[in-house]
Length: 310
Image (cartoon, rainbow, N blue to C red; front, top):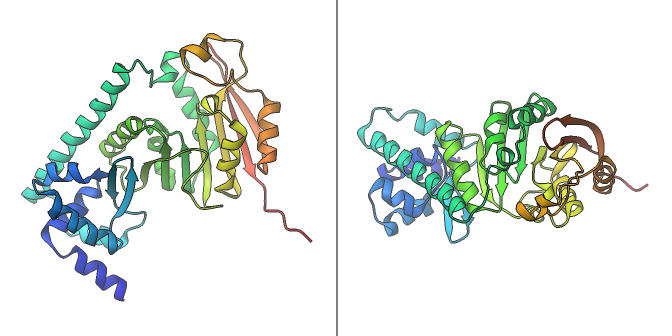
């Protein structure tokens, strides 16, 4: 009862209700919230501190910024927000400003990639069939997923597609520009209540052991300095019986890709993947080819039960 009362007291203030309604639509940092609500940073920081301490908002550090969003579940916050009138002028204004901020965020991220000469849509650059790969990934995922982790989520496309079947979907990426694009995509699709993104290193996932029902790595492994370590870390957070999907280039002889796109590996063969997965206590269960100018392969594996010594 004490926790419930604390959350109700924290929510019972006009600005804090606006902040909750805003964060239900996606993750925003304090400077963005200042622009959206038209209030000072010290004032909003105090409100955000109270909401976070009450468990109504989750803090997500990312570089020099801290983003705030509703945590998974957040039943009290959603019950309160459901009582707010959709046609409230302040809330309507906040939604318009939030949409503008999200669009500016996505445009800035895209411009950054173009200025630096980076190709963030690698599938298109390589002439690969993105739709066929996405279909194969979805076919290999369970029809219902409690928790899904997408490592190297990029623009969040897989999170968007898998959201209808996942209770909680989290995308991790090392690039803040990519995360800006992903946040804009997921906010525009109205998926902020079940999909989340945050910055993280794939070798040090900020995820508890054996907490995920499914883990995916799509076109990520060929950039890894140490693919075996990346797979071992992915397996660490997977529940026994959980599904690990790796979609990547099959072994090829295109040396130019290593220099042009900074690939670290010229694709992979089944023996390599099976060996690394076995060392991570995962059993390769199936493979599937996605034809194209470069062969893409989907490896599906299952996390083995923990070994108990007699």
